[in-house]
Length: 457
Image (cartoon, rainbow, N blue to C red; front, side):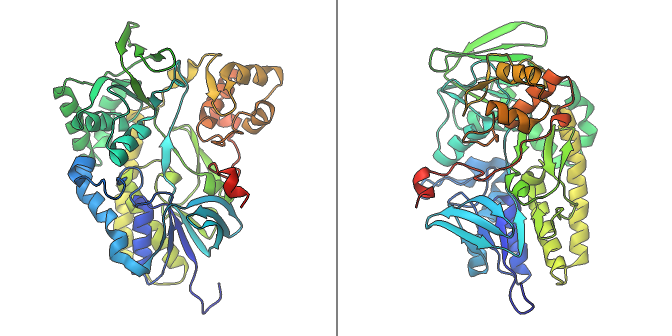
């Protein structure tokens, strides 16, 4: 970038963080490029149905309908101030350029400044029957409902280890689906003990209580402290079995299961950018290191939203705006100090709330510890937990990338996005060390699968 040219600014991700970032940048007189895989903006939490299948925002987003409408209309209001590239995958990052695959095929886009707002995905831990057709993540269950207006089954069981569970249960009941079981694999005690910390965001707590009460009134209370789960069926889901805190076995017929165990940051592009990572002992995952203002360890890369650490939609909007203001400031342009101070106070409240929320929904170590030797961990390559454990001991493997090289775990289509964290838990337990000690899988392009026919064009 020379002194007379406009900086090339790219924002990846059109969820709450990315949308708020581009709006802030446009307000500062800059013209960012916004790249997103979806056809319509909103991200996961504010995902829009396909054009022509629109439904009232209140039916899709409940209490968040106003926020959803405001974010969905941002790009229309900004018009030519933002170069929006929908249905476009950023599959690689090298030096100061992004490799894209979109409606016009492959292209490369350079940048002077980059904001990564790449969001999160469900965290997955294997359990008996998790590979049966009819088993989905909670995020996938949401996508089916929001984007297509369908449930994942006729008789649905939902399992979780985080605040997403009561929300999805409520959404499915409201849509008229039959939810036959709602199971929380975390204990009730931590939720009670952390109630004062959660009150850092009282409106959010009130919504959570409302969802819980509505689920209770609908006859579907959430059972806490579930110790083990098992999906049964011959070629398809037929039932869900579980063990409660007292050791009693339960079983209920169902034809679909939604299950996930919290969220994990989608940080592959930050990895390819060379950003420094740190281990978050509470959520047991590696996340890119960044300042409260969103500055990463790389001077031209900024981080916002769940891709920089799980925080939720409200925090993502605040982070998107704060990261954009940091970018503007780093370009030598003026920013409103009062606005920055307000954002930082709001973000501090969100951090206190999130710390209490993570403590209220602790990582389900008992589910990870119960992964059996016959359980497939890496679906792409068909690698079982037993293979990982034997390799760890027989070949003296103490690090994730060495385990990958010897077993191919993480070499398939998902590039470790699905199996990587579960494999790390298995390796750490086999070696008798903390999960931080086994490291993380290095990122490799393409970060998501690309069709061979596209690659050969």
